[in-house]
Length: 122
Image 1 (cartoon, helix red, strand yellow):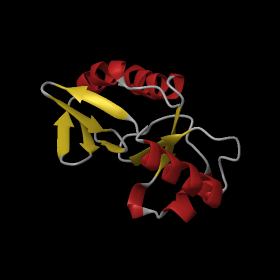
Image 2 (image 1 turned 30 degrees about the horizontal axis):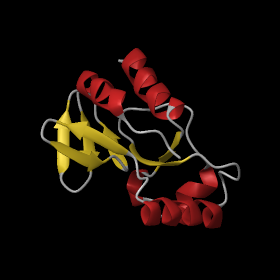
Image 3 (image 1 turned 90 degrees about the vertical axis):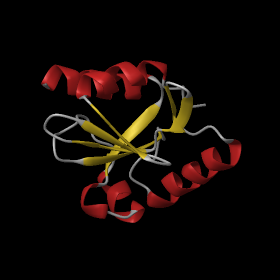
Image 4 (image 1 turned 90 degrees about the horizontal axis):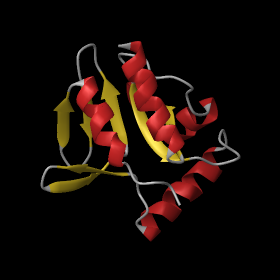
């Protein structure tokens, strides 16, 4: 499982996105101060954001999130017959849950495949 989680993290990271731990419904000012994670852990909920230099500054992250929302350059994944934002997800022991316009449950291996087509952050 660790290699699958590492693969998911690396694919997101390689496309210019950062991953923050937003478990326990942490608001942006709280999770931003912790900075992006360097690995994915089962039982956590994550938020996908653009990578920024000042990655522990809530105001800078908030500005960047607003910018991508205005430009439409949000993280997207492609499912059969549908494209959805990939802004938040949870890792469970045997599955992942993508929190988007609707929730999508899939195996960790399927998430690894789905994010092959994750768009690059611009």
